[in-house]
Amino acid sequence: MRVRRPLRVSPSQLKNWAATLMAVAAVVVGCNETPPDLREWRPADHDHTENPNSDQVQVTDAGSSEPGHGLDDVTIVAWQQNCTNCHGPLGRGDGPQGPMVHAADLSRSDWQATVSDDAIATTIRDGRGRMPGFKLPEATIQSLVRLVRMLDANRMQRAMAAASAAATVGAAAPATSARATGN
Image (tube, rainbow, N blue to C red):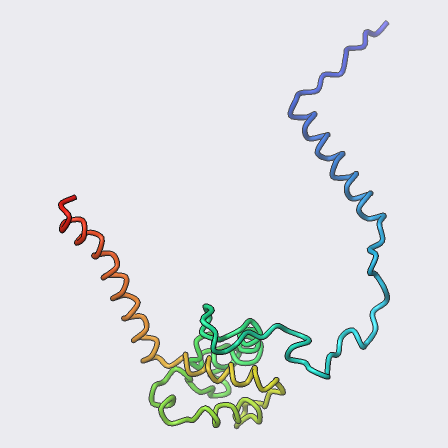
């Protein structure tokens, strides 16, 4: 005759079983509920052609003091999807397709000095050479022009130098004030 031993379960095994059971229960209960607003998708749900800039995306004020220098998420995404393949992430013409299509280096200060904002906007809208035109809302095109202006290498170097100088002055200031007060 065989003697049955009691089943021994460690506390960690019990916790694992309990967690697994709770997860399964949550999935079963959660998946059986139908969301109250669930209905079939209609084409009208996608297109907001009456006022696309305010109905489809939230566009921030270009003159705001928010970080990003007036560039919203739509502008960043438009840059990444339409421009970086040729111009690269910093506009230097070093994107994967850049050398093949002879993409312009938008960070060159001499180029920045010779081109107007209107010319940049027209090129984005209509295209130029191997660059196609992009059918984007006017607000996005103007934001892309601001982004292109921010790519100016001299401007970036000046901004980095100013930030570095401010950091150096900020780091030195507490030490100077501590000596002056005798602490």
